[in-house]
Amino acid sequence: MTEVSCHDRARAFAYRDVVVDAATATITCSYACDGVEFREVATFDEDVDLAAPGVETAAVLYHLLAGLSYYKAFAARRIELGGLDAGVATLALLAGALHGGLGEYAFRNDLDLGDVEISGAAPSRQVALAASEHGPLVPFGGGIDSIVTATELANDPDEALFVLSNGATRFAAIERPAARTGLPIVRCSRQLDAKILTSRQSGWLDGHVPVTAIVSSLAIIAAVAQGRSSVVMSNERSASSPNLVVGGRPVNHQWSKSLECEDLLRRALDERLEHAPSYYSALRDRSELWVASQFARHPEYLDRFMSCNRAFLQDPAKRATTWCGACDKCLFTDLVLAPFVPRAALSSVFSGHEPLADASRHGDLEVLVGLTASPKPFECVGDAGECATALVAAAARPDRRAQRHLRDLAARCSAQPLDELLVASGPTNAIAHAARDLL
Image 1 (cartoon, one colour):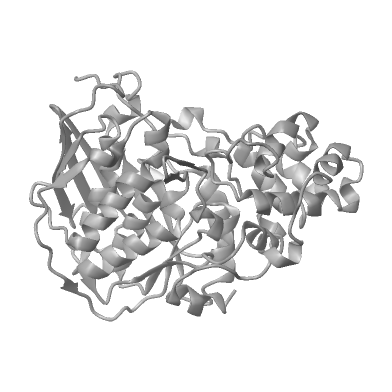
Image 2 (image 1 turned 90 degrees about the vertical axis):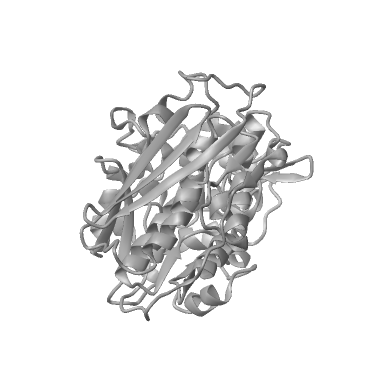
């Protein structure tokens, strides 16, 4: 195999076939780069009819986005589509995912992907779909955001969750709260090519890819196959805010949760399908604190939910079964819930090792609330302003009076009043505007 470093980029990355097999309910995507071939397989529930009209054209979006999981190993200067049908909006989605979705990857690997050429697209034709017969599909990750969307949003008796697993293994951190909702589940497993899981051992580049966009594309396929009205995401407005700006370009860990990505994916979907399922985030104009306040109304999920990224490691043997309490995602989740959930309850969530109770996390909290020059962590965390407001509100709670380190830090914060962050604000789309009245 060719070894590639940040100073030895491959010549070309090729998109090969995307094969939809309704008999086995699978979609197989193939790629190649400098003599190395990759293949990944998505397997759907039997009740997801991959023979339905529009599935094959929707599958191209999945093929394009999933390909970046393999492109990243080589950072090729040219992407060859090999006659894949891709119109203007579809190519814009791929370009956006390349530059925005791989922005953190490029930054960490000291790469400039501005020179990448995309070639070989063929004109695409729009496929007409029949009117939808079923309710919304809600991609569900087990965190407070998707729990709020699933429990507060749809008011539709035909709502279902969309749950993605890693090959044959399911994520316990998703399964526990999903079961608690009582909603039906539409399942898909994504089996990555084993070679990409050992990128570092092979001397290949590695880094963050636009996972949420890939999950979205698979949910869209399921929605098309089942004749569903919409795919409803759970991405807050802070997901559009970059971690930092380098050379005039924003670097955003959450790009595939951003409004920019949402718009690109929706336009590509509409380009390919007439009467396509609606695609939008129900939480686009909501703050992380608003979401936390709504989640606090559902204490029945406190012993079920888990947002620690270590619960989602590819290797099942290495997955955490409880919150690690040490990462920035654990700290942020604790912080954003602290104004609304009793301290004792949060201590129980973290098995007695609540991050906010640990005075040694002072420096990490300073970063989250914007009191240092360091950018916010490359994690799915809120903006500094939201974090500062959460800290001030949490420190003022009677059950946290003994936590002097929080009071001292809160005294240094310039924060908005909590009430100002508990209302809808910021850009969204027309579909989300209609849906938000339900929340």
